[in-house]
Image 1: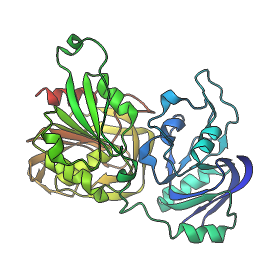
Image 2: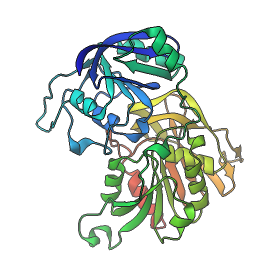
Image 3: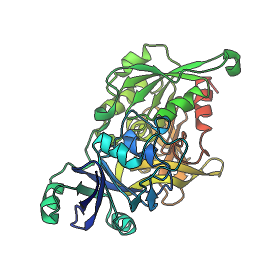
Length: 380
């Protein structure tokens, strides 16, 4: 469906009129913006965007179409999609379809022809808020009324809605074992909304994975004789993701842990820390992060609306947090706003980062963290 009038209304009453593309219908969710200039398919299929209406700040979207290879999951997860202009034609030899057709097939409404710069600035100034996009209800007051009764993101356990229903094998290592010095590691990856590129990043470093549902008890994993556990990315409020916090707490000190994005926040909560909702979050491929131990700065890929509270623990004289399992240091900080971007447990084998080392889409500055996970499992 293309060409029909469409309406986007923010919780504060701000109205944007445009043209619909993708599916005809309406959707409600949290309005957020992504600053990436490319990678719209990875954004659409990232389970971390469940329950959100994503606004792309780059004005042209859909130029190179979509294809099965670049999808980060088996379906589109965004609630709605807002762009300045959607390309009608896919100009890439890899394209298997258009952006509009992919949204239509998924039943996801999009809106184009709106001032995405104004919309982004409104979210940045007022904070992420609930929104609705519709090609059916074009009356602002009517749509606003329903926006304001929609469920907020704070307090939402969305990981349980996107996780795999059953365990499966993934990330099979390809190549001779001696490539990995005779040792292929095996991990359990908790699926709170895991991206396929994370599993590929593990496999590329001699790490095979069994992906398990978010509700899997820690006792089931610890009894399996695995080399490590990955706590994946995912949507929703980390404090409401009770199964994930319980799993991380139950595995601390029993098996090496590596947390990414939501997994980072869950590890912090399992360590007795706190998380908070950010004003508008970080979503894009250009976030500068400094390693506090080395001073190195990496440009990283982000997608999160919650963060770890640096004051959530009592601190020792060395600045490290004091937790039930020992000292924990903050290893990475965001250079734009000082957000906690990494944790390292000194006394148990566990670490986490807020950004995405698989970087799909995005820069690959942080890809070495998968090697760090392998080293941790090897006892380094």
